[in-house]
Image (cartoon, rainbow over all chains, first blue to last red):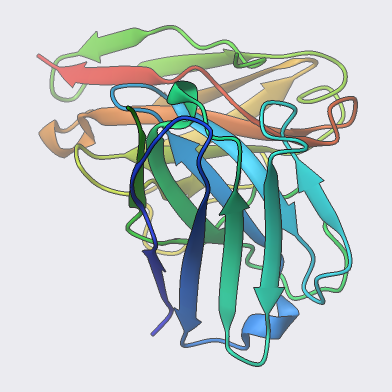
Length: 125
Length: 110
């Protein structure tokens, strides 16, 4: 059974940093593109960042470019999102999501067959 | 700010057909596949339609998707109370070099 379990969320002050993790199981993690999607309280979904299966290629939304870094450790079946220079508008539930097709390149990372339950990041003083 | 525009709400009585539109541009819907997600209250989103009009196993055939030019639509026929949820379209944007979601539509079963 495919499982994605996010962790690392919490309360952080503006300008602070946080590292989110997504522990994957039930599939060959290292052969799938992975993506982070967030949802501010009471708001819609926002695509954040994607990383290719091997970790060589990354993509970011303009709203987080230069502040967030996506990475993965395929030996540990874990996806990461390092958040820095955090702002109030980064407050959201952060979901990790899996691409359904095994491949080495990122192809239109908006097709997700599995999602985690999300981890809440709150940026406030 | 979302680049895919959806109506904020849609509603119908049980058994009716409801259609949700998703308006984009040539750099996203016009040149890439469209995906639809259903989000029940307090839950993670769930894939409903992929590659414009394909249903994952387990999704009832009451749900269907279509695309014309730079717009896409999701239709729910035979509306049921369990269809009350938020619905989002999504597509890759070649100009942004990233994914984009629609603004979301809340479906209410009257």
